[in-house]
Length: 251
Length: 364
Image 1 (cartoon, one colour):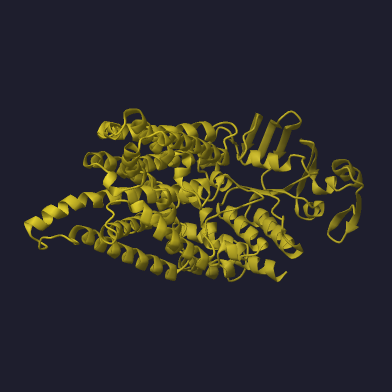
Image 2 (cartoon, helix red, strand yellow; image 1 turned 30 degrees about the vertical axis):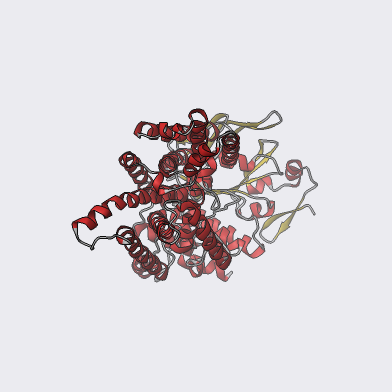
């Protein structure tokens, strides 16, 4: 459970995020959507304590993210940013092993190795686990990073546009894997998505943001309406019935 | 959808026939798949072999330094008397190698930059400025004024103070930024360097000659009395650095990942930079500027070590540093008879070796 109360963050005079009040229940996939600059990534990084908030409180599973030691929070939530640049040369398995740092402080036990193997298998990376990251395609690398935060075995998983740079096939596979993580491993997944149709298909709840505020929040079916989406995105959006539920058409 | 089906089959906790058997077999599989610091066994063996070769080379060079050109028979009392005199140089080289190598590797890690040396923060310019000012104000006797353990410690303290002031203000502020800190370091260093070179222009030739000897990194610059405090400081800082290698591995992954994994990034970086500044300050105050040495050792170590893990990178860097330094010292003393000025040969030979390695491998 994630609870935000009166969360604000300002960048200079003009750009202000919040105040945001939001409650994301345990379990399932929640998608943050909205136009560019709406504050989706900012909200996500504040929940993940990568960015300090100016006012308000954020609680994740009962822990105040400002007051709880970072080391303790690393057992509760894991966050993956959009861009991950590292200059060290690591294999996939070594990278995923870092996800166990909160549990073993770098001394990997057999239990840690098991968790690493599970995460690698979960994201279908077993054949690539000995490869170096700089030898992988963008999509494979992205999956390796997701495997790392999955190996952290936290209740809450925060992902900032994990579909960036992924092609159709890998986007679909990634969303299915995250969906499975939420459903079968019981994780709470919060994900920033660019494509509203991915949110409609795979998210249980959609939180639409605009100009730094939450403007719509509810079950996906309730958000996937032409009038709501048109208002949120400032673009004419039509919603039609697709084979797997509603589809937004705006091209 | 074959991809998803595969993942589903491998997923832990999935219910289905045959799953219990898979779970029983899994732990063994996971352990045999386990990798630590090295990507595979070959890399681990290569590391061990290279470390062994370096250790042998270090021992050989140490013996060479003690015994070459020693007029007495090995093993006699006279031999050891002469060897003892030379042992000081060995100890100084060990101090410099350890401090420069560890400091450079750690500095590159926390600044996330493999082509940088800690001297960018102005340590060497400050050293040069102090030496030049002394000679400028007091003439040739100025060099003597700067000799003595209290003066040595004062120089170390000044350099550490400059560095900590720089990090303290530029990294902890609201808009703390590594790039800006490095830029300010370069500007401060450049400013101090210009002041020093201006003063040098006004020196008499004899004063300039005395000063010039102090401007090249030279093992003979070290005074015997500095060695004990230098060993204490370097041992302390190195021990702390080595104790935090696992945290350093996480810091190398960048701020966001480090924070996600529960490591206090700012505190980790600051603590590392303070240790780096102690190491570099001691080395610089002991023997003078060694701009290229740490950089060269770090780059060569990363080529040879085949791992990202600082637990393995740091010891190899220290050993490699000693071999490079002792090798350069031997060449300088016995081939060119130019006592002491090792930094010249390090920059010449080391630079060439570095270029060859980079051009061959194509990456840092």
